[in-house]
Amino acid sequence: YGILFVIIVDPTVIDVPFANIAQDSALPEEEEVLFSMHVFFRIDTIEKESSSDHMYTVTLMSTANHDKSQLLLKEATERQLCSDHPYI
Image (cartoon, rainbow, N blue to C red; front, side):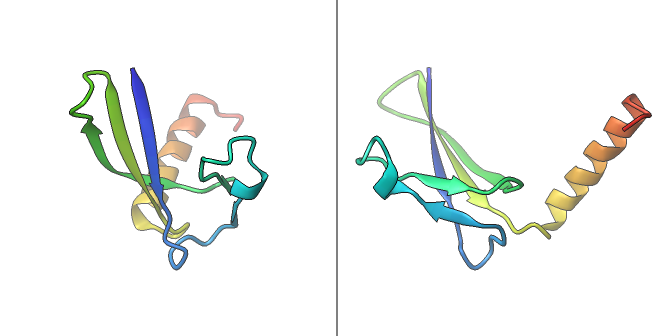
């Protein structure tokens, strides 16, 4: 099984640092980007490749840190963590 992640970054939306590090890569044919911590991506599509029964392509879209869905998920996760672990 294999998964190819296609990450689409809109520099007008993302508000955390990221850098193109392709020129420093050990694999120069790959387009490598280094993202800062706390970068969130939304799953846009999941597609099964027609050429293989075991290969999928997942397209991820960058989101802003103030994205409403992201904030709701963060709050729900924090509530769950705090209820399960009262010392957090």
